[in-house]
Image 1 (tube, rainbow, N blue to C red):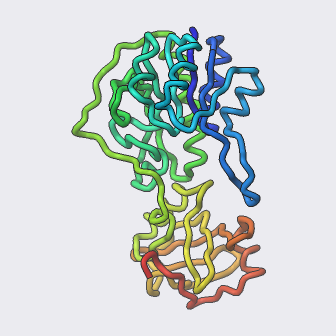
Image 2: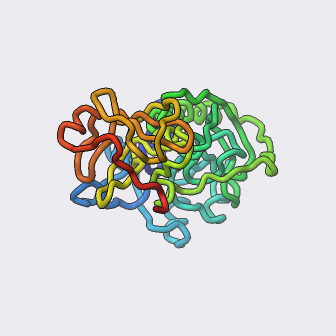
Image 3: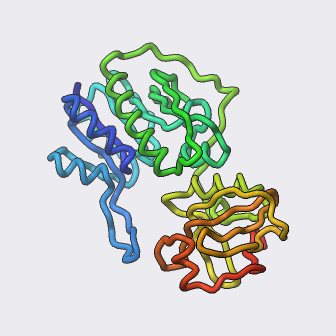
Length: 308
């Protein structure tokens, strides 16, 4: 089948690879422009761009999709269907209507739960016990189109946004190929059950130690591998990457009640968190024991909570 593919991160590249393996004819790839990243803030290509160039596919990186020139490029590619996976730009109605079979989206949630930009992180933050992938026929709304295929997977107690993303990417790629081959009948979403997965912002990053330890532990996993949950110690910012929930510590929230080779125990509003991996600003992720060898952190030290 002739198709145009639109996607940007590694999650999307997994689906593009699956389409190529299934011998679909990808006549054009759309991906976002190169963005500055890393310590040097050098412009870096997206995972989808790297794969497209490696496979010799036609590529376009428009800043926006409303220009007539973009419409002409896509129309010239002659797609029967357009596949959109974590692209990051909203498709205008002119593009949605262009392919005969419309536009299909791979979305990393069980729609209508977690419509929007950050479904994996929001599922973890909320403590959901399962998530999944929805293959959706796109319409003009935000992830509101009818569902073609949907499958659930459990969220494990150790899952981070990274591990969950990888599992969902593999599942979504497989389901995408299946949907294109079988053309399943669409079913409408139950709009009244919708929840929204807004983008992760600064307010989501800073740890509030007054919250239950279980909620803080979920925050760590939801922000791993990026951008990381943060806490302040006087003027220093630390990233906390991994922790284990412990029984209630007899201390005010944010207070270190123990610091040793097996971790740093910090009191929370309910329970405590034993931090086992963390990072100082500009440093590397380190196990607690290695971190403490170069950082003086003792019992009674207090981390600031969000809003302090």
